[in-house]
Image 1 (cartoon, rainbow, N blue to C red):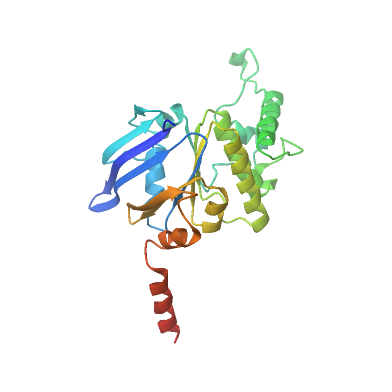
Image 2: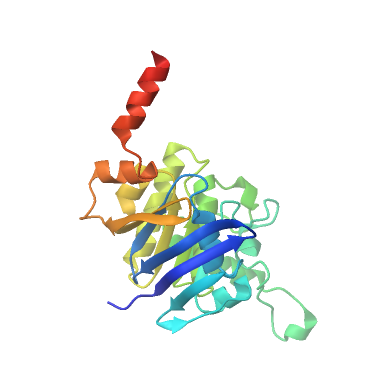
Length: 260
């Protein structure tokens, strides 16, 4: 199967700091690719490069087999990369449908009169959210009245509707309660079931990664320290790689020694 995203030997320096050191990443269509690692591993830097926020210092990025050089997030969006950050970029006091179309509002014809087509925006927002599992009663309700899981779904549906076939989800289950976390994971699986959208799932949560991911890449201090598919890796492997490659038994012994 052809790769939808390929990063080869990507390096990112900030002055003397080497945030990424020769990172390779391969993402296939229709899969959930979990990107895991502790704080400072380089996950945020990697996704900011892939979403056009930072240029790489060196290395190559290909999307759908073609080399790309993003100068801005708009460049990344133009080739179908959509990023949903933790803050979701939603305005709490604005209606759901206005948030869905923020910056891309539909106008009634003739457009020169500048009248928003609220009815059409309401219809599309409801329809697109329902496709991935959220059925809200009122598209004019403020986004701040939605649950955390519903807000995540809105942001995901918005990215897909505006052309994302690579969806980057930055810690989508963090700061949510258990029920809302499960709601978001179900949304992610519904998106995967569409078959044409690749998902890069950034998370600290090992159990969430094991529930939904098809493939894993583990980062530590800017380097890839492990990778594999769901079938390749067992729970012990994932835990060890999540700990930055450290031997868990060594860590356990150190903790016990300190406690004793």
